[in-house]
Amino acid sequence: MRVLKILIVVIVVLMLWDLGWWFGFGVSPMSPWRLKMLVNQGRAPVLIDVRTPAEFDSFHIPEAINVPYPATLAELAFASPDSTHPVLVICMTGHRSPPVVKQMQDGGYTNVHNLTWGMLAWKLFGGDTISGP
Image (tube, one colour):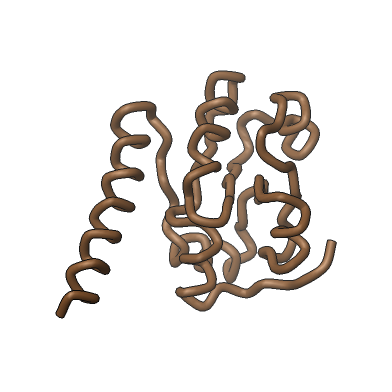
């Protein structure tokens, strides 16, 4: 019973984190199941993974581009030069990516989102990953 209470508290905190970024700063989340649907339809956004190179090499979504946090807007623009094309920013748990989404929005990007709960949720919901650079 205690484990269930802890799990519920963790989920609530994670939800509040995403809602705070969404309503407070305009950082809209994208769920792992929505991304999975887009990938399966061949309509995946540009995937920018802001984890460390070691984290990225251990596993990442195919076609993701590693731009380690913190990144400059120029580094992010190199990964996704079209500021109107859909972009999804990814980290391990959804805590490094929201500030990057905000940074890109402030830099003129109009269609950029945060992967809800990051790579952990992607793996939990059965998303495909690969290893290596």
